[in-house]
Image (cartoon, rainbow, N blue to C red):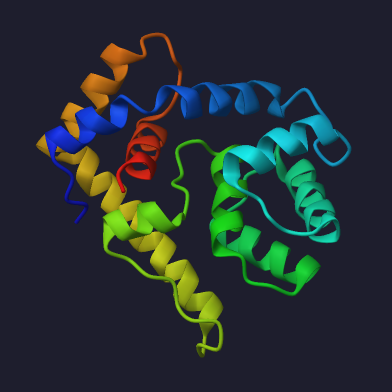
Length: 182
């Protein structure tokens, strides 16, 4: 269960606007740019999602995002694609790739995981890929559980009132608020 109070929601909403505007800008430009080549888009994405990997890694990541942006891709597929291209299981970046393409999916982030009471498996963990996918499934369930409860409905209502005409999903609203709740 994600335990967030109305006071925490109100406080987080005071800090969401800058991130929200950057997110909307990235989403608006997603379909109309070749992400694998557009360094300006990549720099904005890197800044927003705190991508701190070398240029070789980024090149592979943005090629995957470009290739998959018009397709349905699951978290498991994104995780496998990134691993195949970089040799690393990148749960957070796989979720960011998926959430960019499918805005109704959550992002794995340190603060979001803390708020959801979840942890990723350690690097040498046996069956690490399977365990990462399980954490992601749990995160999705916790988001849906929160959205069905009073405080989740409060979050959506207050978010919509503060930022009318911002066409984002309820999951992204939760994601933005949780990211600000530290």
